[in-house]
Length: 329
Image 1 (cartoon, rainbow, N blue to C red):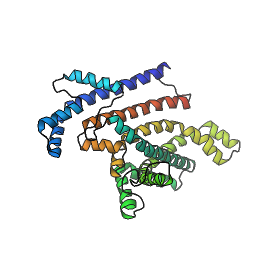
Image 2: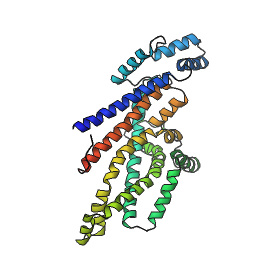
Image 3: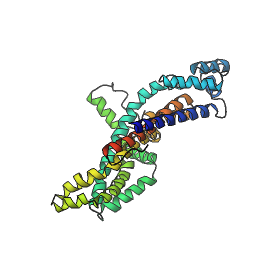
């Protein structure tokens, strides 16, 4: 228990360091961000510069004469109350943007991760069990291709083929705007059709790496005494492969599953931008493009915390699944 509390403490300290670095980097960025936003208001709404600057500063509760340390304390106090900041371009809090975007990202990422994991595990077991079969070079070539191809390239190819040319799937969005959201078949079908290509892009890009990881783990397990004992008892090959080899070889990969979940959420910006899918990644890309540092800072903190706690969960989960592994102090 003390070791787990220590790990949690390290995770919280890491988040604190990230929060502090992000705060000071944003405020020390060359040029005055508030002035840049004020100029955008002047050009868009024909306001006077003084009125625009005053509006921006009041929106962010920003006092240019307030010492930087006092601003930092105010920001940390807001975070402790659960306030991630405000978005300039959307005129709402970052919390509201998260509430709107997180379900879509979680939906696509979770389905993609478990699909790619399941396909990879099955392929990896088959490759390890029947070595020198056609699967080995085929999956290795597939893994080399996906490893060398960025996620957004795969997403772009799928978009061009299945949405632009074949018109099988929609081009953008999370659902058809003409359909009223609710637990109805037209809405559910629309959600699934819009999510199909992002899910396919994620799954295609990650399944092969899981397969190679499972193969490496399973090959090591095949030399264990309990595998030979099972064969000596005359058990069926399928049972040995699944219940003896598969169940033990999958343990190291379960921890990677938790880490990958956090990593996929953090890396969702490019794929969601390609499909204009309104998840966290799409909003983060919009914040970068439109210099919305309030939104960018809040979302970056959320994504960093997701990855850190995913790693923490992986450590704890591995020690629970395999009692031979103990958390080190």
